[in-house]
Image (cartoon, rainbow, N blue to C red; front, side, top):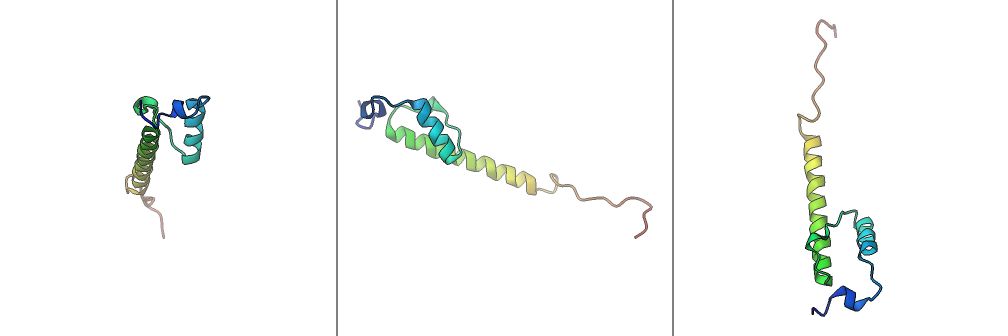
Length: 81
């Protein structure tokens, strides 16, 4: 058994509470699929989630800045300037 196995370190550790707190603190959504119960696994999971969230934010920002996302106003025909 790994020496950083979290349930062995804290008997009353509730992973639901832990994931909720980490999600709020780092503004991420944690997927428990890759979590093995070790501190190392938790750190990697938080890091991956933060990178994924940052990538999504970058993609959203890029779409918002693209010319297709914000079309230029077209002149109204037959309008005098």
